[in-house]
Amino acid sequence: MDMTVVLIIVLAAVAAGSVCYAFLFSRMEVEKKAGARLSRVKSAETDLVRMKAARDRVQELSKRRKSVQDSLKDLEKQQEEKNSKIGDRSLKSRIGQTGLPLTLGRFYMFSAAFGIFVFLIALIAGIQLLGALGAAFAAGLGLPRWVIGFLIKRRQNKFLNEFPNALDVMVRSIKSGLPLNDALRLIASDGQEPVKSEFRKVIEAQQVGLSIPEACFRMMQTMPLAEVNFFAIVIAIQSQAGGNLSEAIGNLSKVLRERKKMKAKVKALSMEAKASAVIIGALPFIVSTLVYLTSPQYIMILFTDPRGHMILLGAGIWMSIGIFVMRNMINFDI
Figure 1 (cartoon, helix red, strand yellow):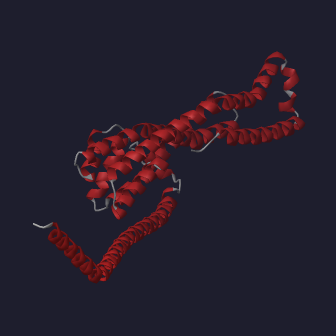
Figure 2 (cartoon, rainbow, N blue to C red):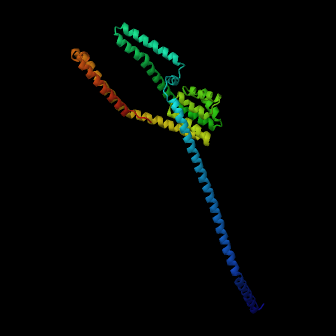
Figure 3 (spheres, rainbow, N blue to C red):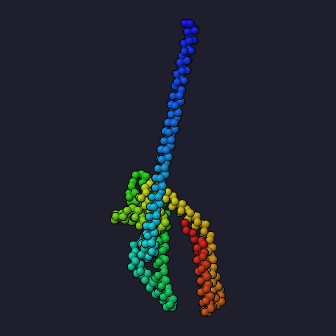
């Protein structure tokens, strides 16, 4: 084929392509701009969807937070009402907190019998009638109540030592698939005292128609501790707002263990101050006893002279104020 013909054909093809491009350029630009605009609109719609989803999540979280806050306020009001009933500090409720099968009538009977016994012993020992009556009054009213307080404190300490372990058992039970009722029954049947008896009361309260949160709040009547209040609040919030119960109880167990460690640390750090307070408070009595043993005539004037009685009264008042101040300085609530 002649080269001239080939060149003519190539030039004709180039010319035809140029003419087509010239006619189609504007349309291609329009389509390109339309595609870019469409992609921007789609991306904007995607961003709007994402923003709407994020806004919905924020609104849901705010609603959930408000629901939890409202639940906490309601629980706080209910707890204040329950604490007003629990905090009456009546003798009957304190006897119930000891865990002993002791009624109020038996307590009064034992107190009266002990007071009469001390009164007779004082008379036999040669103490005057007024002194014997004072000793009987202290023995009949003061000592039994002190014993009740001692038993309550000892039982509460045992409960605090075992309560985190019981919560760990509940966490493992719930994670293994058991419902909360069965986890509570497991503690009530296989736990250690006094946690076992307290959870048994919760189960008995459920059997008479109370819900789990109400039954847990009733535990405050026989075990008025902040740790029990925390547990009841966690159960109540979970029942109203939902959530991971095993995680909540596990976190509560960790908090209770940390509180126990902090109490032990504070107790160890304050032992020096407590020892100093005991020594300072005991010094007047020790010195008086030593002076009486060495020179009884020198100190007996305090007990025989009316001016000595006034000095003893003033010294007793100032000693009481000093002991009260030192007690508040070395006692810490956690």
